[in-house]
Image (cartoon, rainbow, N blue to C red; front, side):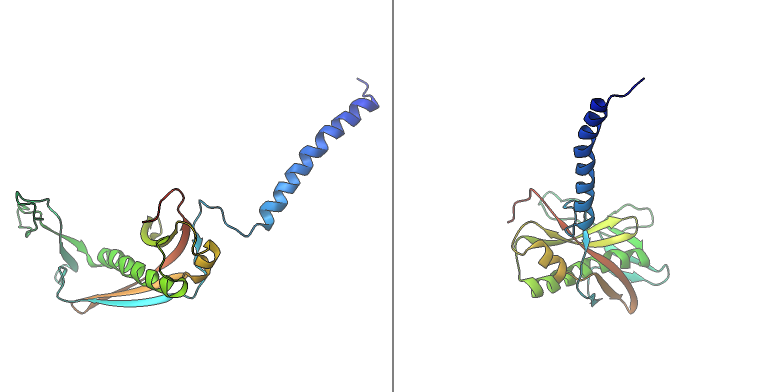
Length: 194
């Protein structure tokens, strides 16, 4: 089959805009510095550290099993009061539960770390209803998330003010545990601030 000059020019004319569109898109993607809004970004500020001693709290360290005993909500009684109690050997009263010390450290250090990150961010950019903190569970363990719900502050300023990590030390009955948690900033769209 013989190709005419006119057919070749038509094919080139159709292909050039398509190829230039692809390369233009690639150039924008490679040069972009703003992260995708649906992906968290690591905090850019120096890491922070915090230490909290749990004394006289509802947590009890059980050295013989290296566990922590804590109250759990078993619902409300007829007066609307929250019920708690003591787990017996038969398990009759589910008002308390136990967890291995290392798991307690992971959970408590994340909560303590989130509070420390919230304080550090507020000190750096001010206290805004558009910024909140949360603990997210990932395959790697707990991650502290700073949630951005709109300006102020600007997203990039929030990333710059957010610590990249928090090291939280928790102490219960002289037993100490420490975890370092990564801190990420993410956009939360469609959420009205309070």
